[in-house]
Length: 633
Image (cartoon, rainbow, N blue to C red):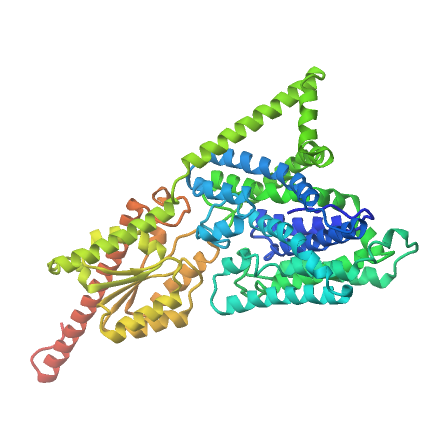
């Protein structure tokens, strides 16, 4: 995240708040199974700080010069943001080219979004989901930098209109009103069914933290400027209030969301409520830190926190690409699925080292001397002592390699991930089967007649559709990405009500979340006693999968017309047949899925036929005894 220039009268404690913010985000990303279920609220801390500091800087400049010098302001922003960003994007893209595979998907779009500070909107236009564990975007964290930079471009143009209002109270009130409007728009959008990623990424729906910082800058303008001239020791209550605000931020990060990055809200505070709470707590902490004579600010200014805070921008930039590259290379999946603790620790060390180097040898020289001055220094180093000349040549060579690697990564980027390819192949096979069904008569009776089978599932079944159609021609497959068990239950109930539900019902809906006995019972009730229900176990690197399979097995054991198709057991030792995300099957994996389902259907129908034969045999024996025609053997 960005670290705007500090006021000339430095406000103690803000580096400490930056450190807290970046630690919440980084630790949540590197250790996703840890306690920071909503560490993403650290981004909201940055937003409030950015709105406050940028507005304070512009207000001081306007007071000093009678106007805001836009070119100078934007030039300072460029010197602050571009050097570290260019290094992260080119180096990370080059490493992605070396790793290859799914991690290169949409690399061109990602680089464009990063270079134009529009990553949030470019990502949304490309259909990427911030909360989708199968999207291995190495620059996904740049969405927040894009929101801030859009603010940096627009706000200096709008600020003069605010200055036309009389007094700081009216300016504060208007900025606060706009913050409330942004937060309300986020709440209304989600309650109206808007996509969570759209609301989270949207500048309009996630600007409330920035606007709250703006309101705070208007409110405290003058108070902060007098801070350096006010002597004395801050009151104890300030330390207490500030400490409670910081503790509240940590608690919000611990209890919010559902552990998936944001939103969801299983047993906690979901977005946008968590981000709104974090923004308000940050505003309180900033107010206390900025208050004249504050003890709280000095307490946050301890050396370790200040060191992290000064380098928080580079830390934020580096940590996500590194953890995506490392986990994808070592496990074949992204960090939203699993990050081994050892990998998280290694990435943390690498992030701090790269951020320290970036801050010292890249960011600070450009901030002090500008782009031209930094280039002049580099040229001067070519004529300096051998060690410095060699170091300069080495940096130039690395920069050239990084640019070349980025070009190669964009050129080599596949159009879609292997999991998307598998799903698309399944969808195409289903469409072809529908066209074939309209052009030919129903298939002759077979060992397992697909015309007697209805299958309802999620993206795993969709990817396996070619195998199902080949194994059981005529099968009716209704599968879609991200479908839940509850949605599948509605589909089966509707098919039963319309008379379109076939004698065998296959249900493959355990991938996307826990299952409930009540919903399973709804499916069995809709199928009725005359149909067999086949429950397909789930296989995916998700925390809930073992519980799903236990619940499916237990439910089948308690219901005579329900049989398990053990896809998890069939594929567990053959994960090479899966896509890189480790749960969508490719062509061979889909064939294994289909055979597993077919064998379960054969078993269910054999069991049903055996039970019918046994019942008929018992009825015949009892009838013979009643009529005196024989005795039981």
